[in-house]
Length: 161
Image (cartoon, rainbow, N blue to C red; front, side):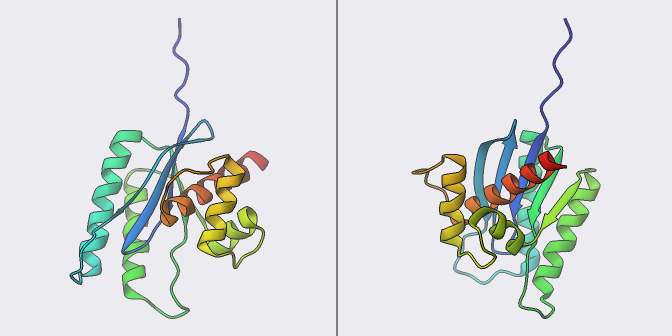
């Protein structure tokens, strides 16, 4: 008897320097989600925060063995933000080192598809994805809902192609 092939696992990220929401999808379903970040009142250098994020991603990758990553592109305020540049380059390097295909989407693209308009608030996006996936009443953070939204958006785009 031959073993069935392993279902692909998608890691979805709402990446940020302070906090990053993540969600793991398998067979089109959210298996687990969470938030990683260093909660401290002290000001920490972006290098420390991004290093912690990469360590957290290592743990997630070891546990779930993702086949691809969908990410909501971190964005600044239309001028260079060194901390975001560090985040983006560190994530790209991590994806590349693991041979993980990366699919990047803008927040406006995801919000339009999920909530119906590009300027939907975080609460509106969270509520829309709860309704869409039948997850009403589940307690998750805003960053988790955003990671779930980008993962769902990615899966629906792939299914249409």
